[in-house]
Image 1 (cartoon, rainbow, N blue to C red):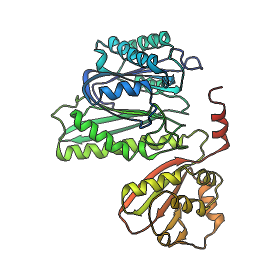
Image 2: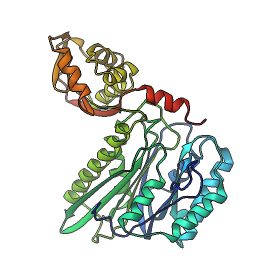
Image 3: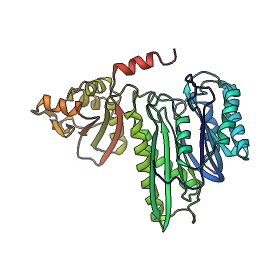
Image 4: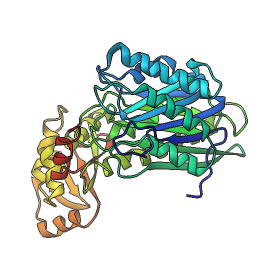
Length: 397
């Protein structure tokens, strides 16, 4: 992989038997022994998992030393026992690295409504703690420890110079189904050795998430466990970032989060296409975002892309029921650069050529112009396939 990981962090992953497939990592540790500034952004679902309840109370913070994650079991809809189990996970992880329980965060992902096998979890945390290291192999073990139905690891890295200091960012995420903002069935941990205050970290992460993890979907189903964490060790040195350095860091963090986020719908369960939707010309960015999400969540749009059908009517009509006011006579649409609809009316195009442009590449780009406004937004989703239906019909059986 040949990347420089952020200074001040150790990683590990271990298999403890939560997942049905023996030997697959299902416990992950990310440790900052010197203490990290931490920020979090979480699902807005009113039904949220126990780990979300714990982490919301503990972020933002200036003293987080460990994040423990289990995969294969969401610890969601598990009542008071689930909350106690999440708290116990933080206690066990903290004890393993000589930290206090309140210096630990926890994430879980997997099947909803099942209690955690805490004896296995405890053994997994103990095993992972013995394997902690700062090298790439350990990082990848931790990545595999947060995966569920993902076909492969989802990672991204950045390195930049801020006032003469080299600063590194490394991100890992997971998610392939039950993806719908705000946020999606996804977990993400971004580590950096930049120096940030808790307030800076929280504001930077929230802004980055809005353009990335809040701009993706697979089927539009919001999860109970969604969590994105930013940990800053400050090990690159110097005072907390300010002015231009902070702006440069923000851009790098946002770019990294977008790179991570796009990998989720691209790995949508059964997906054969990543669909990039760009909406322009609205009165506000929020209006453009709503139109983009409405198009993304249309099963008819998603199946048309899967079949390589340049069915512009499905896209235009989806924009029309998004609940955003615009003049239909000003709407234009391009698919993979081909103009299909202009100023509220269809234009002549070669359907075979456009169909081939969809079928022949993994990413399909839909660009909708709805008026003269400055509001714009992007959203990424996947196509809808029979494989998705089959997978999710049998997921828990």
